[in-house]
Length: 100
Image: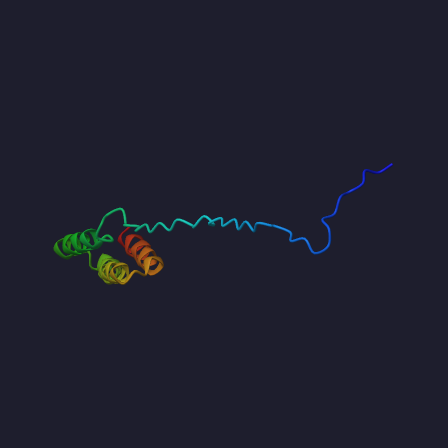
């Protein structure tokens, strides 16, 4: 058969110990990275340089691209200072595209 289990007599106090296990959950590590453009100035120097070259060579049609490129480079620089990296990247690509 089955083994008999002994129960404490009624009225006897039972001793029990409560054990509380506290386990700390791992926390996620937060890492902040700053993306800087390849030129460091969002192609501002390249845009100004090309504008000066085009002024001296008389290639006026090229100025229709390089002057807006200066404005996009300046916008990218101010967006990066504000922390808007998506806008900074977009304006940097536009400045480079207009310079090419």
